[in-house]
Image 1 (cartoon, rainbow, N blue to C red):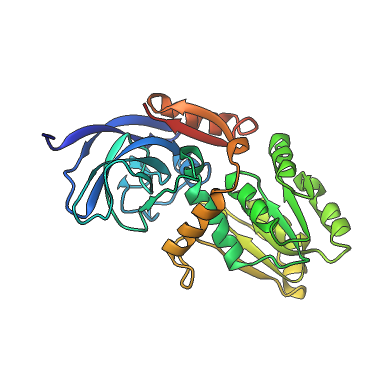
Image 2 (tube, rainbow, N blue to C red):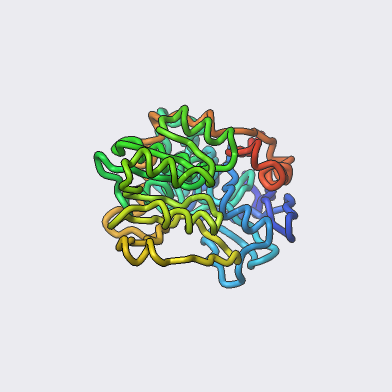
Length: 333
């Protein structure tokens, strides 16, 4: 017989560049809840690293599975894959099912069986690929906000996981896909995934001009998190083009020069946020994301696999060695 509350370990951000494992109480599940034992989780090199570096504002939104307050201490994360260990009678789940959960990094947890928080996984998507569901859904949302049509030129700034997935999705329809990143290893991965050109920020204007025959980009996606990249996106986007901002800049200031390109080229700058789509609601985008990942390799995007007991080291790698790291997966015993 299970005794409640049970004990687990969860990852907390406790100060600037400080992450630590703390004891966590697992609440007794209600009939609508399930208890999940985690097997793998993916660190978000975007939002989570902003928190880790202390670059969030006090009024940040906290998802329902998170705890604490910004800036610190806070338990935050949203990319766990695990097995159902206990299922409430009204949850619709059964013991042993594999699931993706929008929950902070924690070895065991209770979560509401809500389609915005919990997703069943088909056999075609393995545990490692499933940890990419949330970031792939972010990329999918960007392409829904600004579809890349047949024959168009797409430019993606930043080749972290979200940027790579944007480029891979744009590749399905675009005539030309150009990616921009300072890190050579990430540019090489993008080329392996089918990008037509992978360039440094300094070279992007000339390359876009050449490959688009002087028309400029039809759609530019800013997924780098670097404020200067948004200025570059404006400069390389052609008349009536769209600029999609996926990056969340936190406390960093974004200064733009809008004349002459933005005004005379009739640009549209679009804020893309994965939580807000009407026709494509959360469940529909999740289903489409799972289907995409069922035939997409992700192994090239995994640069480190780290035991959960050493989770703080994963954040140190992403912070101190971005040229060597991309996807960091935490593995649970």
